[in-house]
Image (cartoon, rainbow, N blue to C red; front, side, top):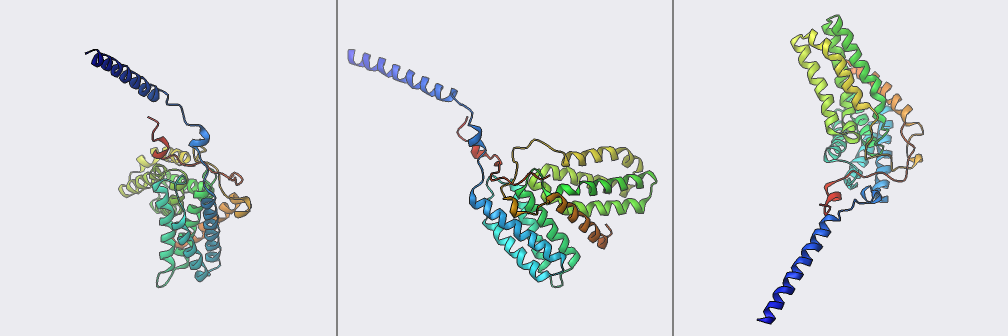
Length: 295
């Protein structure tokens, strides 16, 4: 009996100690150091993205020259590279789909039985912006389209004031065309919700024009312009900077972007319509894996 009494006492002591240790373990949930929470991309990822940017730029330059065969070669290279890139820490699921989807769309346009140069140019430009947005999250090239999209809304506002249906329809067509080019890049470097916000502007304008709700349009225009500004606004984001070396990109990316915008504007008549210097590291997009074991 004495033996069993002592055994029971020791068992209770051991159980109590285990409980204290468990509680201490749960209570010592110290924050993960920032350096661990924000791991840089690997050299392999960095190199793959550099090659993707070069292929996308080559495709864009070739399509501008009207060399569709060379454009097809460069887009094919881009397509292969996009399947080799590990996107972990670089983009969300929606961002990945935006990049690969824009590349596939360019490939389909080039592989058409009778490729249309204007349509192909738009698809290649869209892919170019999406690939750039993957590498340069804080100052991507698509930011150069802010004035263009703002101008579309300003034209819409002027048409609304005079209730000029043809002018309003033309402004909407121009907005749609420009947004088609920019949207995938927005998803990559901003978020799918920002892209949905732009889609909501399109839906509202379309429905209001269709129903002839000029008063509703007039009242809503300031809010629509503000919503557009929010998408382009500088924000504190955890995913920042570029992994590419300065020599891998055009020396003046914003000027390149504005030039692209001007070229696209001229192409769209066919259908009636500061990046940071490159760094050696890029902040990861946090995933659920980063938080496992911390609760």
